[in-house]
Length: 200
Ligand SMILES: [Zn+2]
Image (cartoon, rainbow, N blue to C red):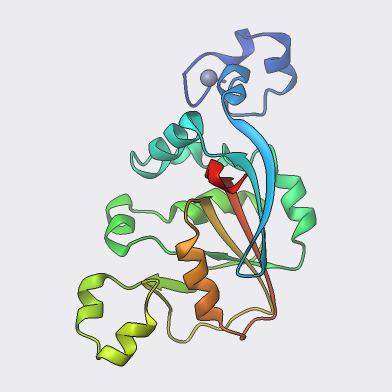
């Protein structure tokens, strides 16, 4: 097996590589990720993350999202998969929206790929409202759309929502999603694989 980031043959690595050989990353690449549990609140909702967003995490994410390297999809939750399945049993995963143009270019929903390894129920309830389409809305509606995110029409919301993203930077999209759910869902949790170090 070859490391998906650096291309090194993993079996030829050290004994740790062989022992943990199911990891699609070699030990060297994995060690560059800053694994650190961070817990905080966003508008009163629990947020859990497992990595600090750093250069190594960022380049894996870019290679996956922007270069369309779908093989990397299992790299992100590999070390925390079982923990998440246990912690959020009974929840339905709700993806944060990407800008539609970006997703079209990409040809796949990167969060769906990333979280599919959990085998949990998943829905894609939100959409980004581009600033262009917002301009056509009447003013009173536009003022409500501070976060450029809306619920898709006809979405049936689950009782327990786990809002997920790859990383949390300012939290504004997540805040927008919470705003959309607006009392309709009582049980909400947030999980992001990584967090910007300002959240520590
Ligand atoms: Zn490597």
